[in-house]
Amino acid sequence: MDLPDTTDRVGYLLKRAQGALNGAMAAALEAHGVTLSQYAVLVALDEQPGLSNADLARRAFVTPQTMNQVLRELEGRDLVVRRPHAVHGRVLQASLTADGERVLGDCRAAADAVETRMLTGLSSADRQRVAAALRQFTEALTPNA
Image 1 (cartoon, rainbow, N blue to C red):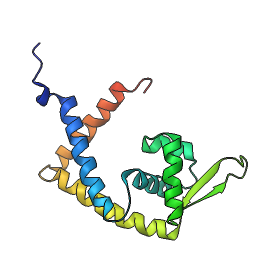
Image 2 (image 1 turned 180 degrees about the vertical axis):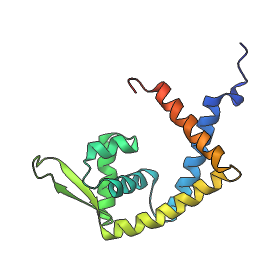
Image 3 (image 1 turned 180 degrees about the horizontal axis):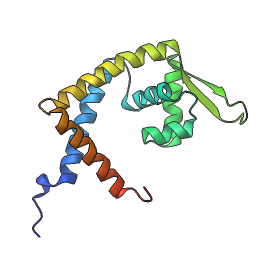
Image 4 (image 1 turned 45 degrees about the horizontal axis):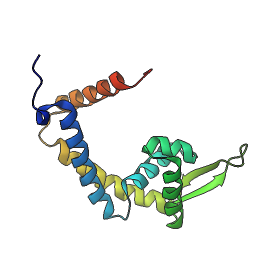
């Protein structure tokens, strides 16, 4: 079986698409003073308030040490608050402040615009096929999925 040239391989194209998406998202979020990691935290806390540093690190694909710095930055801007867990006092649970919710709304609009631009020209059925293929790729490469 002949393999396609490197630039035509699915893995290469996925990496290029990821790089282009990250660049466009970073630029869109920068207008709101938020990084990609900070945006991931804001979204995660909106969906599931009270997540710990470790939970947030897993969701944002960063180390716990990096997440601690991200959370400190968000706390410094009064976008997030952390409080001790009711049972496990050493665990800090994070949640959005009112300002965090407002900034998240602005960031979501910016992120949605980037995704809309990325998907321009694809039908609804094409979008569903792309999403299904990406889920399948992930499942095929995830141990014990």
